[in-house]
Length: 88
Image (cartoon, rainbow, N blue to C red; front, side, top):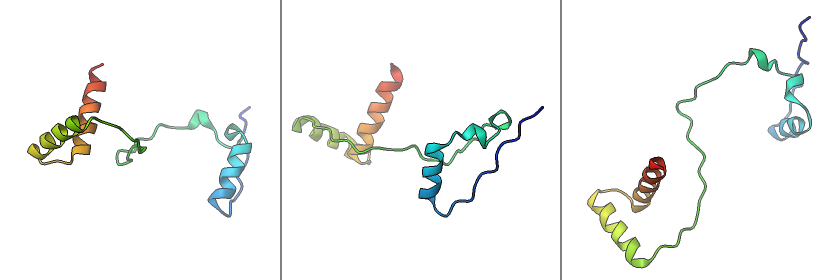
């Protein structure tokens, strides 16, 4: 016999829905066996701001290289970091 999921309640706000899901098991309300993977190609990855201390001379060399490539130095740093991490 197939178990039918419970009917999800209507929520008045996102905060109310968040509180509900924090205290309830979603498997009682969603048939996860019937769920399908979804591709979201335009979804941007989450980012987090960090503080990075660099020697002044190194930062100046990075800025010169970024200027040569006509790009912001922060973007160049991110590109180099991503490239280095991907190599490992």
